Image (cartoon, rainbow, N blue to C red):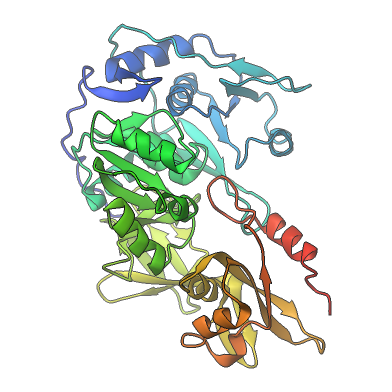
Length: 445
């Protein structure tokens, strides 16, 4: 089947004198950046693979393209924890670790990344975008992290599709992100989007709500904030102004209707959600306060078979990708996400999606966070349980769910916790969920 060809790239002037990044408080122009890439590339070890562990976003981008110009494959682990890195490095002999924060780890070769801070203006470094590759690893939210290889041309095409869909073409806005660049959402929005557009890369990763607000308010340009529902729950409690904020993007977890309204009221921007995965990159968006369905980027095609499985075809992908979610595609091409194939549960002869039940749980006013799970009852039958962060009582939780779910899916057991073990991008890894449930007596009578 012949793939749909993308439109010609949007005419964006990326002159060497244009702003590219704010690094350590100073402006870096595109020509300065490419000069830095060239100089760093000459100092890299001669190895086939590099683990890019840079936390500073400018140094991350610099290392990524310097390695690409040397033909090195960039590895992006789901976590910078050395135990995780050591598990992965066994499969990639000859790999070295690159970071601005080197540590002593026996048996691991480190390269200290420092920006050359060149004042010279250079032309774009020659990189074979079709061959230059990186391997990102899934977050482990559904099991063991798995490798997903992409060439850099994939990100170039995807970025253009996203810019067009989200109305970001030719906007000289500062891209502020709370997500690490090693995660696909952070990698796309805060690294590749600025690289292939007029958006300006911000090198930091502000964490605390007031720090994030100050970065936005002191920005030399209007700011786009790419963040997660976990961060938004804290950001809506800030008191200061958000006058320079022009867009709020959210991903990695479902955005509840209540949190979307709170974001609009507190930050002055109706949030937009981004949909995608490590395997596919982003390929759809929606504004939850105005629409319930997802809108695919232009030239995206979703194909469904008789078994209800959905495949994604797109100009930025080398082949069609089987999606893990259950999708309902409407006649106009927009779609609803019904949950993962693996999260479909059956209780009392009735079916429901754990993801949808969790969404309903988090939509209850007064629920800060939570998730639903299945446990075995005394007679071996399945029962629904809930872990929740809230000051409501158990009956409030059940009554909040009752209008939206069948009686058999009202939770029998409700566990209250101070917080959930979400990772740095706001996801719940499968291993952490299992550990939490074991501590709560999951499986016990």
